[in-house]
Image (cartoon, rainbow, N blue to C red; front, side):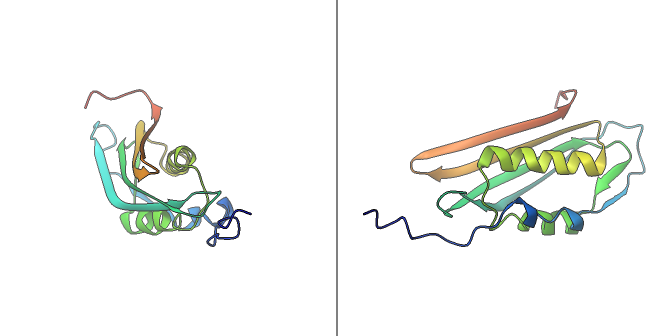
Length: 134
């Protein structure tokens, strides 16, 4: 008998990802290709099978079109992943999809540098739009 089979932590489904908290604010320089970059070293989600934590440095890099993401709303949105059972590759792509849907940027790139688990580190990069030179 596998003594770990019954050892699971609370895991929520994708429906608990709080996209409703995200807010966009007007960008006053829509004709200018300004590169905006946010990062946090505190992103966390959980493995959908074990419930063990996945921690990452998450970088959001984009060229705004007409909107910026309001930072407080972004913090709450990212925190909502804390107990979501989601693969690392899926988390990065889901964040990209949600932010592209909100902002309609000219370009966006999300990078998740996940800490080692089981001796393997993972880096996931998802992009939207035409690549930038920075």
